[in-house]
Length: 516
Image (cartoon, rainbow, N blue to C red):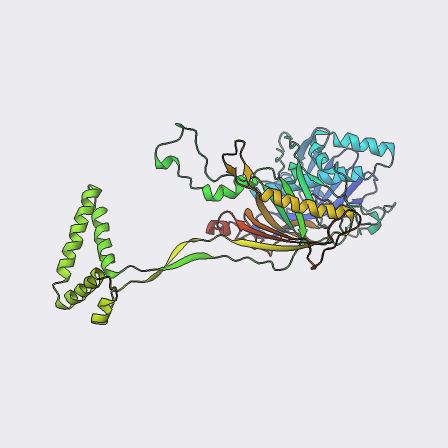
């Protein structure tokens, strides 16, 4: 993913860089965040994570004002070493959320360190340092990202000899002249989406294999110090909801196929795969979601209700179901005969059946001024799938950006198109998409991107339609350099592939987000 290195600063050691972040400490309900310091050596690839500022887990025997080391990464041996078990467990272990934070922290740290090393290749020593670092086992996945040539970069401040004091000093001030220029990555590695948790006991191996994920971001370049929120659209291969067993291998009873967790695991089956394309576009207007369920009115006449109750009691009373159904029918007739002994009821029932026989359903109303009680009730009819529509205005400013706009459109068209099987006998389902509203959290120290806490989450979606307007201003205009259109209006219509259930909402109920 695109990496903003502007928050890394040099220390008194010219090869050591550091930045500060905040991460949750303890249970989610506590809403406590511990400030941490990340120090990294660009020559060795080693880095350490320490608690700084207010120590939420106590001083642990360290002097007041001194950082508490939590864990470190030994790049030469590709090993994580836990230095403080209490802080490590409360921040990076014990729950799925903490494990994800641990993965993302290590992933981004390695990408950033390698990017810093790459940006300092002016000398032979710098070049050799970068080559040695990217060939280390723990940095090979990060190298898949950093090796991609950068896109257009917005000019930023230049480097000089100004350095940042140690994080132990509360008065340390970041110098804008000491910021590392951002490096823009073009191809994603699987580490952008999952990083194996490194076992602190034996070091583990978090290296993942190389992937060919394509990454597109419009517009090109970025302003390092401002940042922006954006919409991220990631495509995944569709996974069928049913897993058919081979012939003769499946069970023969209903219990063999009951899957209580099928709904809960449906999205995770898709998102556990390696993504195929990642597109980042600016936030657009008209963001909304509409959650609805189906309710329909339903009629059940009093006569039908009486008959149904008698039939149900006979059928559920035990014995042979077929004979029970026959007995139920006889009881319905018997009850009807008993009811018509009343002269008033007999006249009304007679009028009702006379109208049915003569195809005059309103005859009983005309004859008696009454209707059979229809017992109308509003009944739940099932969930409904949500739809999301987005409109983007693509206005390329450079030749490279015009190619980028074209590639974004082509990528969406390709991933939403059905696939043909090798025999052409079947058509395969197109790719599905995960849509995320990405928010740049600012805690006064380090910005970090996460799911927007005040915008809805979206389950995997099908891209049901794409509309591209090549002449959005009503006239045909192109650039002279390569013939690109001067603008494109892109309209995308998505629909979730599964409903949102109460369990989905409850899973996010106590978390810092809007839920689905």
